[in-house]
Length: 132
Image 1 (tube, rainbow, N blue to C red):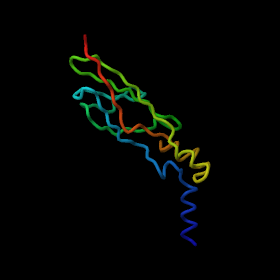
Image 2 (image 1 turned 90 degrees about the vertical axis):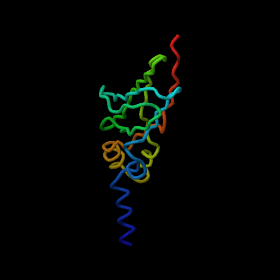
Image 3 (image 1 turned 45 degrees about the horizontal axis):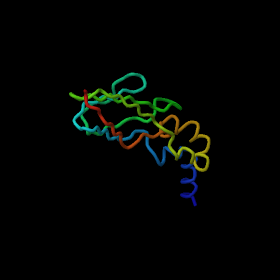
Image 4 (image 1 turned 45 degrees about the vertical axis):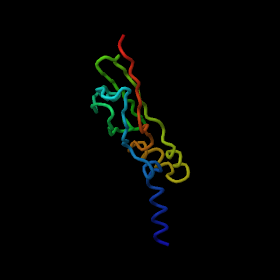
């Protein structure tokens, strides 16, 4: 009986998204054609990742308390027009689970503070156009 009570308390104390989801995501960055240089810039204008496509980067889904992150991906390849892609985090479906499991503490404190209330896509595919 004590174990059941402890498990129930754990669900009340922590947020649903924090239990099921995460606050950092691996995002595959692909370009067509591959071999393009990229840099990822967060909403504050800081370069957080760079590399050559195809590549995977780990990015935070949150920019702060109740603030989803937005990233700008700049892609450059000789012979092709430079391209910019904007990637925004979105609300994690498990965040709504707080209504049933995490309660107000999970909904208003834990998930927003950890960033687990947001998610990012698994991959970004960017097509480059040849220079004329």
